[in-house]
Length: 102
Image (cartoon, rainbow, N blue to C red; front, side, top):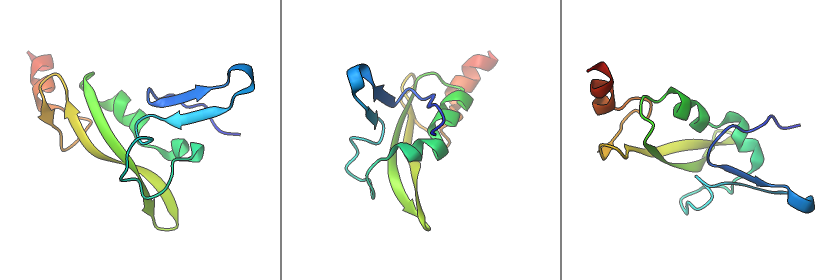
C-alpha cells in the first residue's frame, strides 16, 4: 500500500471508479528519462522542499532521472516568483530571508 501523498503537484481522480494519478510537476516535462510512476512519490524531495523553504512563492521544475539501479525525481530549477530570483538552493531565498529578518 502506498503512503498518502501530501504534495501540491500530485493529482488523483478516483471519482466513480476512476484511478487516474499524475504528478503535474514532472508529468509535462519532456526531459524525463523515464515515465512518471506513483512509486516515485514515496522518495520525492519536493514535498520536503516546499515545507522547508523560507519562501511561499517557490516555483520548481523537476524531472524523472535514472539513478544507479532505480529512478528518482530531481529538482532541476527553482525560482522565487516574488523576487524573480533563481535559487541555487530551493530551500532558501536570500531576499525573502532579508525581509523576514527586518
